[in-house]
Length: 240
Ligand code: PXP
Image 1 (cartoon, rainbow, N blue to C red):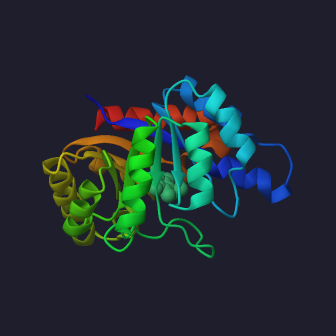
Image 2 (tube, rainbow, N blue to C red):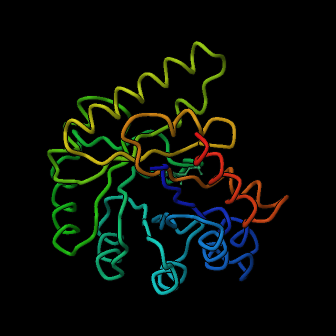
């Protein structure tokens, strides 16, 4: 079975927010992505609302026909919004105001009680819980202990490596992380920094269920349109 593709449309909203207007619309980008073969739509409602807005979440909840994955900080305001909106999945991520994008995985060990409490509230509401973590054995163990069903392995370190030897080491860490997560009974997703050149090696890792990809798809969409950009990514994943 080929690895599923969750298309992250945050950066469509980033372009819109650059002018605080109503185009381009991540809702339309999400619909076109689904027509092109996306298996899910991912958005990150950040506390500072720098790209995705509450209106986007509300409308996407109505229009997404595949699966809506809401990336979010483990923060009271966003937890209440997620519980009220009921996406199929939430992915808890660390969030810092000044970062350009998510930097590193969650510290599940350090924030264990808050994450466990949030995970149990989401599960009780029928929302699947995934935790965005580095491929670190202790963080993975803590992730399983929170009751989360999935982890999303942070692929940013791998994506930033240059040279075959460094890439190989980063891939080996992801491989070990995927095996460990699977042994712990966790489903395995991955994402961050994946593009048309580095995606296939990640698809070939064991137990991989879904990849969440945003920036590279939205960037290519500027040149070829989002339908074509999603189709090309999906094809690479199917061929991997
Ligand atoms: N997964 C998570 C948890 C993320 O925070 C992001 C970035 O929003 C992505 C995947 C997608 O990363 P990229 O935009 O680099 O493809």
